[in-house]
Length: 298
Image (cartoon, rainbow, N blue to C red; front, side):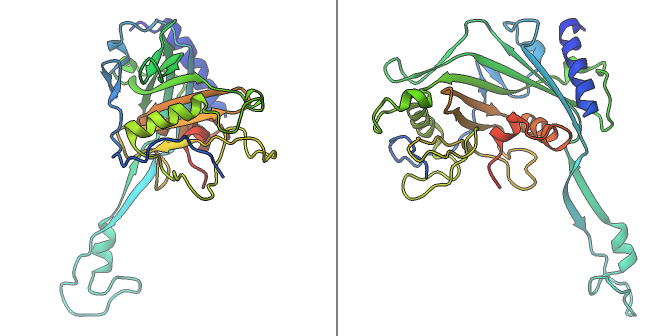
């Protein structure tokens, strides 16, 4: 297994993990059903890192996390009382308390050690839309997730290559910064606006999206104190619900922007990438930026 460079970065990350009122784009209102992206560049989610021949040998970043399995659901199967008689306190009516208790089952999901590694091909970009109105996304970052075991360990499993799977894509774009916007008219259509319009055309409206009325918006930098500043929302297609562990779709889409720098991100994320972010946030890395991007405000 050829792991020299990657193993060094992963082991370092594992050791660290062990120690520790919006203005949307003027797009046409189209009722498009959300269909998750299947992957990118001919590769589908879940494909092994070893099948990506064009990627460089060394990752541009590695992170690790660990968490306990999360309870998924509880099942109770009633065993009818075989003969009339007294029922123990707390037993459902008509159910044999002791026999029913023996059939009490909990199921769990997630948990164990997670490793995220990111790769980028030098100079590779992607145009979202046509040549006239399309938005250039650069750099393009491929994300791979590995998950194993239920105990906290800082060494790689021998089968790492067979569990290191394609789990996300991060596309970066440059929009107008807040300082630049102050010199432009209120009607100026930003790169962020154009990209949001194209994402809505392709994936439908993100959760919580509306074009009229008051909208509560979160930003990567928090609430703005200058009412004259335009605000740019973090929009999510098929975000996590329930316990927030992961999306229920094969992949979600998230659009975010840092208004200060104008640097924006479109993130495609499979359930495994969501689990990694959940583990980072809840087990030692509070305020994790990936978790903040993925999760809506409670």
